[in-house]
Image 1 (cartoon, one colour):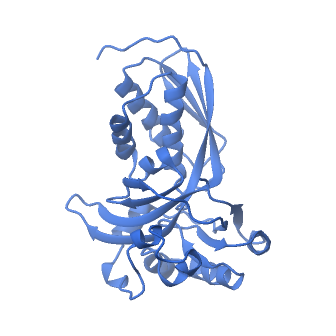
Image 2 (cartoon, helix red, strand yellow; image 1 turned 90 degrees about the horizontal axis):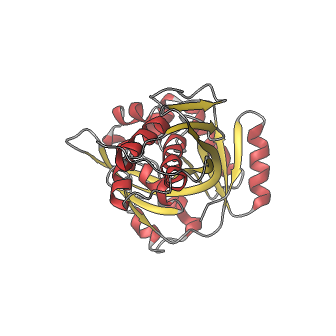
Length: 293
C-alpha cells in the first residue's frame, strides 16, 4: 500500500480517556465463535487516564508510562490502535504514546479500551484525518468489544458482545464510590468460568426497560444484577463484603463493574458518598466520581 504523506500541523495532543461502570450486566448466551452475547448499560464516569500523543521523526510507535502494570511494547492495546489507524489511513507517521494511568488495571472499568479509543480519536485530530465512521467502528471492535462505546461515551445500552451501542438519555445525577481491592481479574477467566445455571433469578428484567424510564432509577437494586458476581464472589468473597458494606453506607445500588474487581456504590447525595469513600479509603483504593454526559 502506498502511504500518504501529509503536512502535520500539530506535534502533540492530549486526550482524556474516561472509565466506565456497568449498570447491570446480563450474559445471554454463548456464541459459536466463542464470544458471549450480553446486555448491559455502560455509564462513562469522570475518572480518567491521560493520553499524550507526540509525533516522532522516525516511523516507529513507542509506548511510555509511569505505570509498571501495563505492557510497553506491541502488546499494549494503544500500540495496536495506532497501527490499525495508520494502516486504515495510509498515512506515514511515527508516534510516542504516553499513558498516565489513574484507572486501575484489571478492574472492570474499561481502562485499556478507553485508552485505545482515545488514541483513535486523538490521531484523527493530530493527523487532521477523519476515518469513515464505519471504518473507525470496525477498528474499535477489532481492538475490543467495548472500545466502540468509548468512541461515543456518555450513557449507552449495549447488546451483542457489547459492541452494538445505542446512546440513551442520561440517568439522573448521582455520585459513584468505586472501591478497588487491588485484585486484577481477567475477563477471559470470567467468561471461561461463567456458569449459566448460576444466573437464574426472578428479579432481572431486560435492561432496555430501564433506559425507557419504566423503572425508577433509585429502585435499580430490585431489578438489575451483574451475572459475573456469583463466580467472582465465590473466588473472592471479600468483594461481596464490600458490596454489602456499600449498602450499609447508604448506596441505593451496589454492584461489581464488568468482570471485576471494582465494586461501586451509587449515592444520591455527596455527603454520604464522601463518607463512604473516606471509610473504604482506610483499606482500599477508592474514587468518588460522577457520570460523564
